Image 1 (cartoon, rainbow, N blue to C red):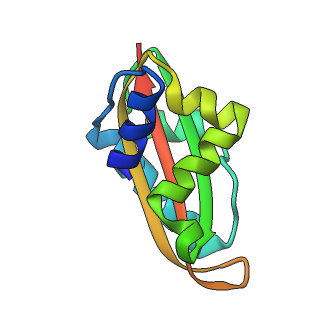
Image 2 (cartoon, rainbow, N blue to C red):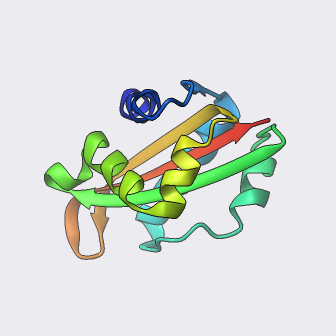
Length: 123
């Protein structure tokens, strides 16, 4: 997922992001929680990221889910690029760190679904 995110950022002139450990924990936890509860929403993402210790003047989050090829990292990044608000988050030049969480399980009636969270921070 990191490679797909940074590939999209490079293709659009944005600098690469590096993994931030607090963001990684937050993203993994949120993806697991969405699979367990069957919910698909951000909730109070800002407070959640701060609770995990995320730092930065700017924070952002994108979510996606898919099954089969639609759940691949490349497909998820294409979905984010096709959505103006997600695209803006994904390509924000000030973001320097990312945490990615992908949980796999039954979701919305589909087995083997991948639920992805990408949490970003920057200056």
